[in-house]
Image (cartoon, rainbow, N blue to C red; front, side, top):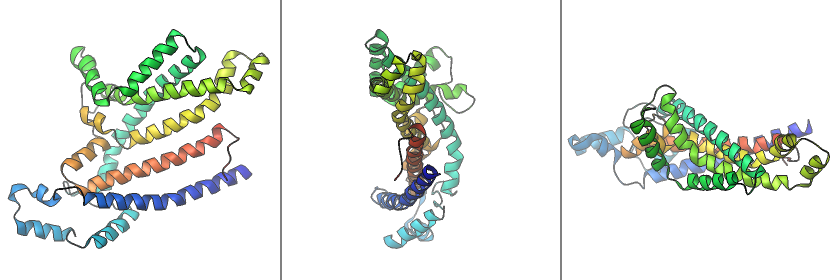
Length: 312
């Protein structure tokens, strides 16, 4: 009961701390939109927009109000869950984001599955077979995975498996075959990070006294590795998984653009090109909220992985 009370208090404190964090993000996002060059109304109207029509539309949208009034209106609307309306489609921004979010969620979960399976397997095998050929080769591949640009990996996979072999569709959104290439493209870099961190964490844990004691008691090596060592290793891995998943859920801009995947990342790119300020602000705020709650979930998960951790 005491541990549950500590955790409840910790969660409440963290949730309260998100309020000033969100207000700060809202403020910075609002101000950045006025630093970016280009008038969104003039861009939307094109060559046909005369000055009188542009001025009338700006007045209707409240864009000619003083900056503090616009900021206060924007802040109060966001706190009520109203992210405004898109300049391009005249639809609610939040509705547009939530429409695209399932596609991003599907891609993010598939990418994390690829990253987790490859990264954990390579890291554990490398640690248990330190200085072997597999250890050296997997770490070299992991280094290449971290260094390789995402767009280059995506284009290479499209050329090999889509264009040359014809096994998978090159781009678009549909059944699971459309998901494989973007999921692998997006999962390679997190897999490389997870493999390197898992290996280093596992090697550190395997040198601990309690691991030597478990082996001295005659416990099977498989039990020592997957029961005793794995739990403490996962504390580091969970941190990486949580932050990588938050990053993927916020929209993988390059991957979604390359594979024409209709997610949040592609939505934000289109909004930037069109100078759709409400949509850009909405995607940034939605991303910030995901990162904040991902951090909270990762911190809470520590207590379940290591009972020694307490929240004071």
